[in-house]
Image (tube, rainbow, N blue to C red; front, side, top):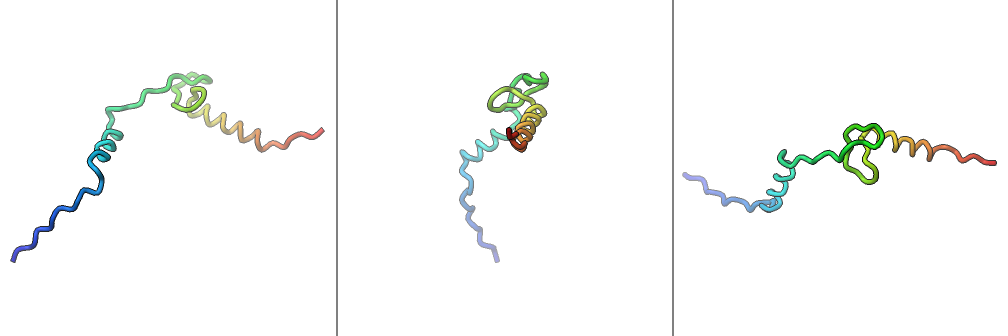
Length: 75
């Protein structure tokens, strides 16, 4: 006895989307660094506003949080 040959299922992901995904993960398209950090001069990351490295960006966010948590002084 022979088994019935199952028909091939339709492709779940469209070919265009699959091609775009392959291009996105390829190593040929490496992003260029954004330049130098305006505070310490190391390699900066892409982001809104001034060019900052990840360390300076974290310090800036931390300083903002500290300012928000301080109680306002009353006269």
